[in-house]
Image 1 (tube, rainbow, N blue to C red):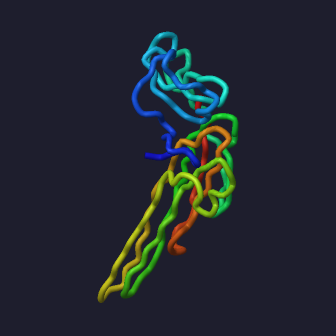
Image 2: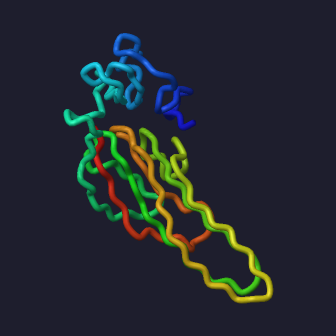
Image 3: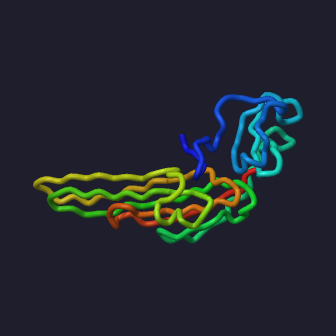
Length: 180
């Protein structure tokens, strides 16, 4: 389970709570918790912004998700969401293209998130990974593939897509959407 950097507590608190039994918001900044009575007495997810617990459910009973904001990203560069003060869904589409005669190859990219720009060196929480391993004998093979890596980024956190093995992975598109 993903944990907050420097903490053994998960980003999503296990179990369910009532509003009365939620932990204090200040020490639980950027955590989410399920409550049985959080949104006007209805069950739903609550998000801690460090000061208070906020319902992630809008007045119509759906999760409040912002419009997608297109991003231009580079590998091993720290970014924050377009609206850093809110949690966001970060989605990145990557392509893998390689040609191999005989042998084997691996390509890996990892989506890291954390409270500092150190995510560019793999410090923080590993949120998602794309990996491709290929072995070829006696033929020539060209391989192309497309994959999406994504994660929910806590408010004020950074994210970075890092190529850790190989050079065949490229970023096709990326966007984030504010949550809450």
